[in-house]
Length: 214
Ligand SMILES: Cc1cc2nc3c(=O)[nH]c(=O)nc-3n(C[C@H](O)[C@H](O)[C@H](O)COP(=O)(O)OP(=O)(O)OC[C@H]3O[C@@H](n4cnc5c(N)ncnc54)[C@H](O)[C@@H]3O)c2cc1C
Image (cartoon, rainbow, N blue to C red):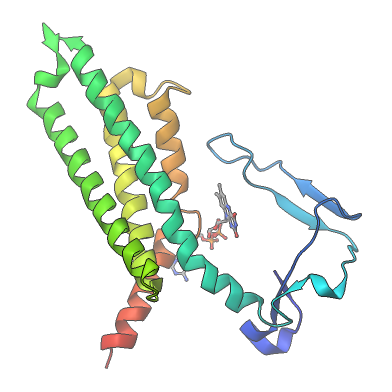
């Protein structure tokens, strides 16, 4: 994405396809996310030349293209978060059944049971919400607000689920590269990626103001 006309605001942004093997393109992967996965890079362009036909959707349409895509993108991150949270719950149930303290499995403690109950309830809310939004998207509705609601709620709720999973696992849960510790770090990223929780709230609030503001 680049500014092709600084005087036109959003209409002055264009999307240009650049082959990463082109002369002048380098990737800087020095910035590694907390998961340790190399999914992130700064793309450095130094006098890179591309044919005019690489401008996607025509000059000045880049911002519109990105915004049209971003709602779906936000929604599509949700199943990944839910899958990670589901795994955290499953691991926590297994651990609570097998870890013994004070003469029996920790599963018999109500404090542990309540954490599992909260995790399962949040997971159900996340799954139901995302399915409802996906149905609306499939039916052709504009789901900009719903996608932001899902991204906001699911990323925050799934992170809370991971946090409880770490708690249930005790010392094991804060051991580097234990599956639960890894899920915790991965889910933390999702409150940032594709727009932070604050930006999702801005989008939702903007929609509310448009519909109901005075
Ligand atoms: C692992 C990973 C993968 C990523 N992958 C991609 C990708 O594939 N494609 C891509 O385009 N981007 C990607 N990103 C970038 C990601 O979308 C941005 O990091 C994110 O949108 C936040 O932008 P920023 O880092 O510039 O934070 P900033 O915008 O600098 O935000 C800093 C803080 O200020 C707050 N803030 C900023 N503006 C406002 C506002 N208007 N109102 C209230 N609060 C505000 C933010 O919520 C945050 O708390 C990725 C990031 C990570 C960590």
